[in-house]
Image (tube, rainbow, N blue to C red; front, side, top):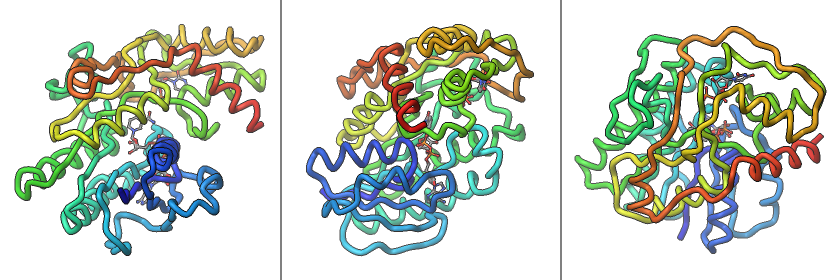
Length: 309
Ligand code: NAD
Ligand code: UDP
């Protein structure tokens, strides 16, 4: 198959492209390098089944050739990035999503939206099932991500209902692994960077807020299965193993062997207090569940950051 991946120079997009190529498909990666990096594409150099287009997906574009799938991952993803690029985040969720849906429609291709657990906001239901409508502050700082993705989901469902387009919505929960940017502000690279350089690990609030971290190869497996099935309604993809941020900081201290202390800092606005995916739907529909334990995934990620310097 020939598959377009937007956001291909990013963390998840580059791993997904690897997997698609491994499976024998041809990939056309699209990215404008807003938050991604050219170095994430270096290993594709000279591969005949990989082609790259430097392109902002919020602008109309007509890539050559036919596509079987359009996978839309382009969007700033880390809170630091989407707070730095608030308008761009809303644009890529709205006009970017519309342009790629139109492209999928023109090609009779499948479409997959990389949505997010941010759609649940600061959730009052725990763990979060796909049927939960969420608890989002529509005008808070994080709304540029939450509402962009909620709009993108609504638009995707509208194309499915109006045009019968074969669409998929993955609600992705916190995912980590090699190729994240050390300075993207997300907790995994931040704590590893701090630990490896002997700087204090900055825990926001009292660290009692929870997250559930999924290793990137598990997420990619879920995305690959989802794009091949016929489900249009959202599907959670994440690892249900939940941990407080304070426990997480201690685990990073242990795994890196750092003597760096923990330092408490103010909790950012609207920071979700708890987050854990209910993955019963993905288990039943896709026969999918994560296989990489947090400790193993963190060891691989720490090793990557040590090698990357
Ligand atoms: P990332 O920032 O590493 O990658 C996003 C990529 O999109 C970057 O390469 C960036 O340059 C590109 N991009 C942004 N705007 C663009 C535009 N207008 N045109 C073309 N390219 C553009 O982020 P990531 O962690 O790889 O996330 C990928 C997707 O998965 C995002 O849509 C994100 O919302 C979603 N997601 C990720 C996580 C996670 O934990 N990693 C969690 C939930 C959702
Ligand atoms: N966090 C933290 N210290 C940091 C960065 C993040 O305590 O240096 C916390 C953040 O407040 C949140 C959690 O870690 O509660 C996960 O943050 P991240 O930015 O990785 O993703 P989020 O789940 O908030 O989108």
